[in-house]
Each structure stands twice: as structure tokens, then as C-alpha cells.
Length: 128
Image (cartoon, rainbow, N blue to C red; front, top):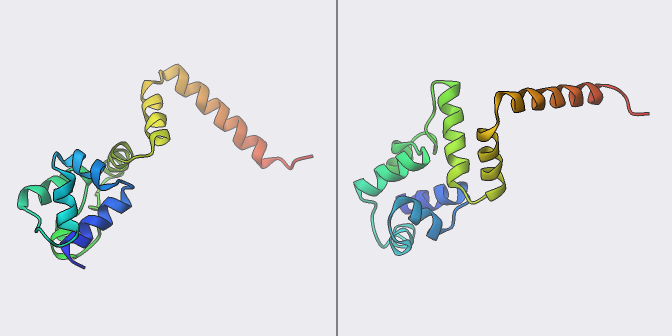
């Protein structure tokens, strides 16, 4: 797989079209199209930007070695990476859910916890 094909794979995995992907990198759609089609090579600056912005593993992008997305050593870093991918994606519902949760107070979270616990208990009971 070429670097251009790997860029396209990343973009598709994130659910972004060329326009949105390039906008998040601060470059033109024409550049991304040219890279994906093999008419232009990745610069170090674009490579670094893709890796940093989308949590892509540098060796995978440049050489095709390892996993597409960087591995995290802690649960917290993994969670932050997933949140970043959601927020940089195109699914507005997922973004809105995260933004709503971020606004919850401790009281709101406690109420939601009670609702989920209640729902879990109901799910354990057979329906009559």
C-alpha cells in the first residue's frame, strides 16, 4: 500500500471526505487528492500533522508498519484519542452527545447514573 493509499484509508476510517479532512489539516482538498492519487508525495509537515491531528501511527503512515492508529499505554489516553476522533469526524449526533455530556453537572450525572442502574435492573427481570 502506498502512502497515498494509507492517507485515503485513514480518511475513510475517520468518515471524512477530502474537503473535511484537508480543512482539518489546514491544506487544500487538491493536495489531499493529489497525495491519494499518487501525484504528490507526503511532506514531513503534512505527515506530522496527520499523525498529531488524527492519532495516526507515524511508522504506519510512512512505511506501512504496525497499526494505523497509535497505541496508548493508559486507558485515559485511549479515551481522549477516541473523543478526538469523534470530534474530528462528520457524525454530528456523536459530537452533540459528547458536547452535551461535557455540560452535565455532578447532579445531572448522578441522575443519569440512577436511570441507567434502574434500567439495568429492569433488563434483568423477565418481561411479563
